Image 1 (cartoon, one colour):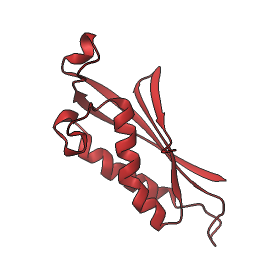
Image 2 (cartoon, rainbow, N blue to C red):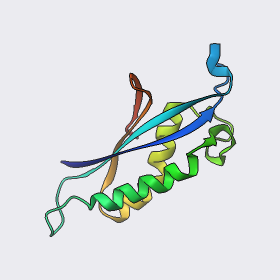
Image 3 (cartoon, helix red, strand yellow):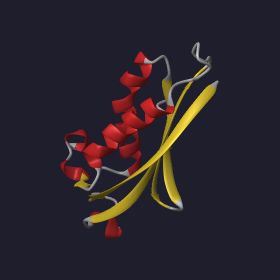
Length: 123
């Protein structure tokens, strides 16, 4: 299996309900996102996929969330915009594009801080 990983960042605010403590107040993070796509074989150019295409996909999704209040984004209607749900949201937005290019989203890792992250694999 080959895997390509792109790393990008965005800043956003959110409120996490029913978790207790300061997280129930409006607060923000400088999120770091690692998006990985993979497949068992390479294309005729010897690439899994062009890095630029994966960067574009991730950039488009993050642009929708950058400097926003995540609770107000339709993709988080009725759910906490936790790092876990942010990772799933990103994966689900990119999965159809990846499939069209013959790769699959293997994981999305979302860092809320330099020492705390979650990983979504879709399995």
